Amino acid sequence: EEFNKYKSFPEYQKHNDELSLAEFKWIWFMEWGHRMAGRATGMVFGIPLLYFGMRGMIPKRLAPRMAGLLLLGGSQGLIGWWMVRSGLNDKERFGGEGRVSPYRLAAHLSMAFILYTALFNTAIGLSTAHKVANMSPSARLYAQALIEKVP
Image (cartoon, rainbow, N blue to C red; front, side, top):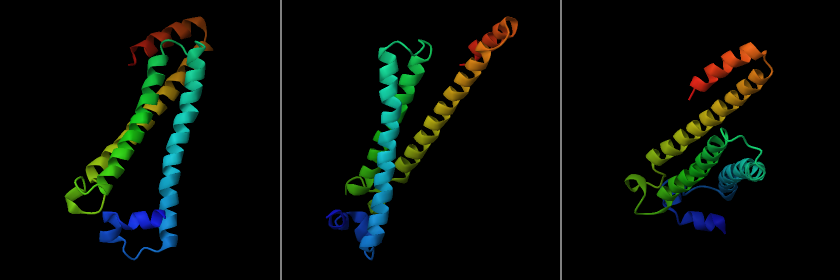
């Protein structure tokens, strides 16, 4: 049924008219897996964030950053949907071709890099804060002064 729907889209008509059902299944499961991985990641991040946030267990300094990360993740999903939509709608097809807009694809990839960088930066910051907590009092004061200067 999904394969028959796919045959009506411009991508199939212009580029994949000899695509077999087995090849379609592989592509479909890769795309489905990508969407499910994104949703699962959002749930794995969002549900504990909500749980710990409701109980006041997230430091006030960290709460805006965590909410921002959740917002970035949700935005990544919306940009992905917006990107795919550009290849399905006749009015939005890039240059009359049966493909997604390369600009939207670049936006989706760029957002992934931004999200990864923000997650990595947060993890490094938390790791550094943990090390500061285990330092001697004088070293801790010096390290905290340095950390406060970092945006």
